[in-house]
Length: 210
Length: 263
Image (cartoon, rainbow over all chains, first blue to last red; front, side, top):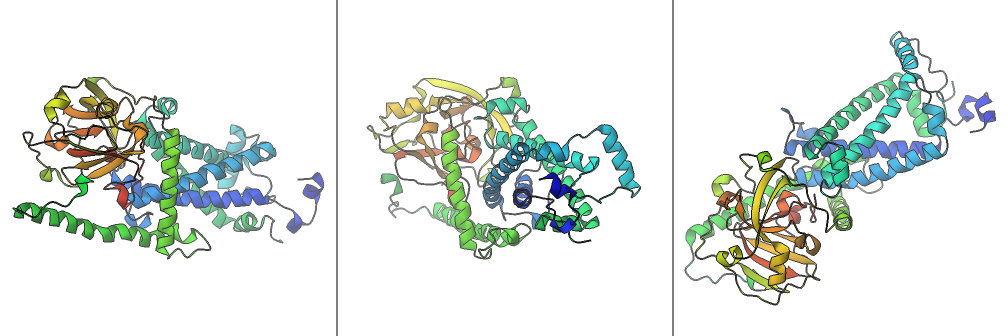
């Protein structure tokens, strides 16, 4: 992005989200949806905790079907995630958009948000709470993928298994990684509902005319 | 092949026929639940999937998922290391009681009579004679305390003992360049595995559990134990083994479980 574009005064002409980022975002959303819904069905086959997920919100119809969806969508998540991270890092966008992020900044912005005084005037600049949330979800998905690899092939990926504390602990890491991701998505969707133009931006890449 | 030949209808055992008919009917009755997997693919994520194809076209979705599952078989074959050993544990970590697991309830465990038992060996092997349990017990025995991982997610540690399967395959002059080893079981279960896993040093033709002869609920007279594969790949009550280049699937695999089933 050139400095001219940033200084431009026509908001609708300014690209906020590049095309690659919008595509990877929606593919990631799709992969997460399929993986979580099928994962819930797999969870029900042998619940870790004293509850089950209602079958109506799961994908796959039975354990075998859910596993097929799960092990198909995992490829989408991993390849798409790899492309997202690679372009993000190589283009410098990750450093520019998400850093620096400081505890003091997060505290300040969180308080401001609670008081309803957090500005969304410039959709190209994330506030500290957003930076933290997006960095967290990237890290969380990475943890889910790594623990998922251990569950999928705990014998073949022995080093990774040991790093995650063994098969049974990896199972719990995978579960809580999922729970954190679902919590993120819930908050994410509430935020989009509060500031609907962010949805248009994620689809069209530009800010709508004010 | 001999093991696929229909039994002669002389001296029909009425009870056995009824029992078999019941399992067959039960399987048919289960089908709607499995078909529901396709209908319910329409829930939640289903609608947004495969834009451009009609998601309601079940056969397309099923075919696509099956294709990816076959691809995942290949990937697992590549990931599989013939020298990578599964973790072993001290005996103090054995799960007690070790869970019973089958496609039927524990009250339906098959009792196999040792006196009349012969293990059938067919296919791409030099020596196609039947084996008695005594002959198998006379071969070098090995123990392992390993983790059994179920496709459902739970896992349990157990102790199995028996003949290293690679030793057995060499003894019968199996063609180890063949792709598959298949198993037929006394409880009508069947499965097949890839040759590299069959030759893995921790793949045992087990005759004992926790130092005792394998009890019926754990698969008497023998169970193939592979710590490198998920539970459903480990057949119990084995009555026939065949070496082949023809894919022969398995009880769960034919219903949609991944065939390779590595762990």
